Amino acid sequence: MAKRILITDDEQDIVKVVKYRLIKKGFEVIVAVNGQEGVDTARAVMPDLILLDYRMPILNGDEVCRELKKDESTKHIPIILMTASIENILIDNIRTMGADDYILKPFEPEDLMEKIERLLA
Image (tube, rainbow, N blue to C red; front, side):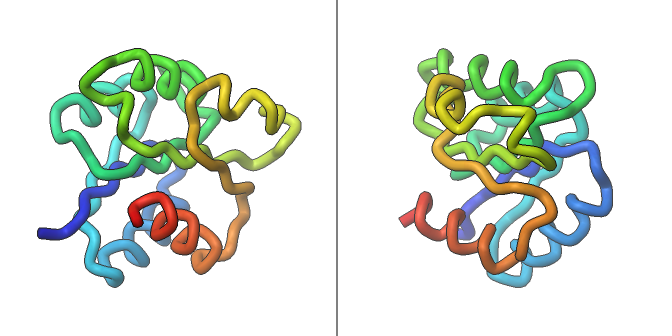
């Protein structure tokens, strides 16, 4: 059975590229376009991993991450935080939020795939 990855990002260009790469690698991909939809979708489908944009409408990545990590049913799901600027988030705060890793936008798809594969191993 294919591993499920939830992409929570409101930037359609990023979603399109990442989704294509993940499907090509054999993953099942689900997409949420804002923070609240990401929380609701994660709880409904229980993905194996979440790719989470930091800046989004309704709930930002920090709020989504904290919400999912305090929930007993979703706290085990690895989260990779995606951000356009490290100034948005201090590296020390990533673990406080509950994210398991992060990647800076723009990123090389291969770098993202390495992080995903490491967290799913």
